[in-house]
Image (cartoon, rainbow, N blue to C red; front, side, top):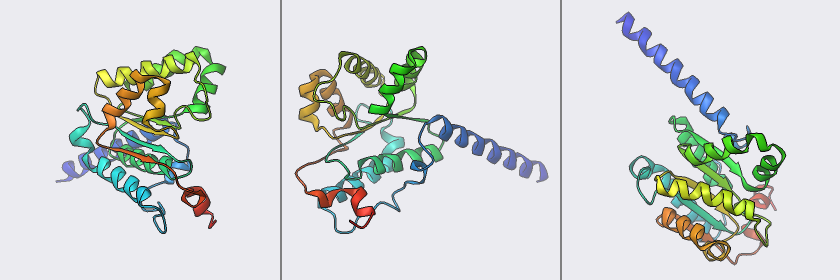
Amino acid sequence: MENDSEFAVICACRNKKKIEQIMKSSEITKEFLNLGFSNFLIEDVPEVVISARNTALEYLNNFDVIRNKRVNSISLLGASGSGKTHLLTAISNNLMRKGVSVFYFPFVEGFNELKQNLNDMYSKIENMKTVEVLFVDDLFKGRETVTQFQLEQMYAVFNYRYLNHLPVLLSSEKIIDDLCQIDVALGSRIFEMSRNYLVQIEGYPMQINYRLRALNY
């Protein structure tokens, strides 16, 4: 009995260390590690925001079943400030606590870092391709036109994950039609990977802005 107890303590300790390492390597900030479904505001919001929350919860609950299938990703698209990043971070945090590796790539900051440190570019892109779950935040944000370098790298990442049935958590202010206009091959892959877990938030006033509501706007 004592040996069994010792074994259980060792396993729990190793599991805790593994989860701590997963969270550290995810590159999700300490502030974002506190985001979950329980602190996502759902009072006085449009139905589409409730739908996004429910879709995110459904995706998390079904993850173990769908993770190796063609449709194994989730895309929350559209209006800025509607809580897309919060919900996808909540999924990420829950997955990491279960021992699933997640890598967070904020599009704007991520490409700025790649340009500043080209020596690390190939290893980071390779990690984005092969990590268990990739979280791409604000894809193509602030871009009227996408640079050839950005498009080539993102297509390479998404195509690799598409071919190898590796999940992606995606947020973008651009909807599927916009993504297809940028690059139809990329947009169509995103749609196919996430078509069962796709929410597009469009045409709402400032009251939908999650960050302003959190500040009692």
